[in-house]
Image (cartoon, rainbow, N blue to C red; front, side, top):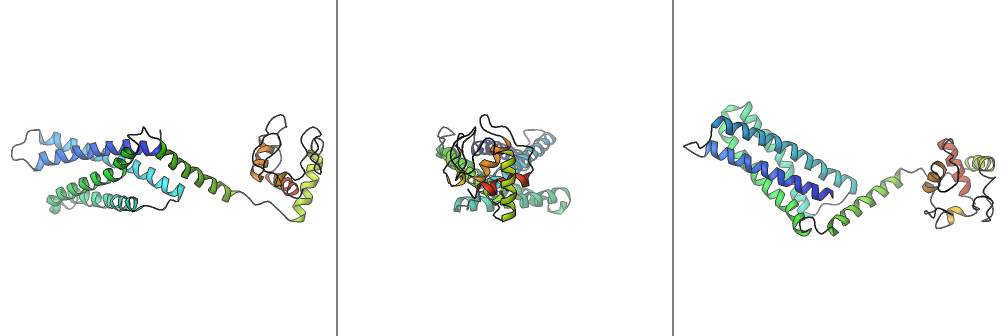
Length: 254
């Protein structure tokens, strides 16, 4: 189940809480003769408000998480949705102040409640409503795949940025050669593609893929191979991070 589908379901819950809040407000202040107990209506209105705040916070988290992960530039629709979303907590805060503290403005709280409700309906229509329409209520997953692809690319870029660069200084290369000859030379030929016990490693980082595992030939995958080896190769998890980087520095010269 995609994040967007979950957000859309939460938005429907938000819409329900909004509708309940509007109904109780209209019943409390819009009728001369009350059909329901006033105290019960206030309790229901308060409960709907609490549900609204919780769901709104969850949806906001999911939206912000997506934006921060993907670094996606907002569309006009997304920007408009964002402006409306920013207005909601401000209006909600003012309404609470009017109801709880500044009672002389109590009558205006109803107007704020109505504005918040209208904004909520518009937000849900242009976000979750749009998603549910284009995805045929979640049946068509092509939209989700696009979103997931964007998230995947963003994660890969973040991981790539966080990876240490391959060392190129002579000291690291020399240390790496010494460690390699002591730890790896029994099974791997560093200067030939010829197999001893394991494959030869000459030109390993210039090849498109690693031997045996067929993973892309990158420093990161060599780090993984040292820590969590593929196939029958023993683990070299006991090596320090610095020693592993020195080995990679040496392999990079082959």
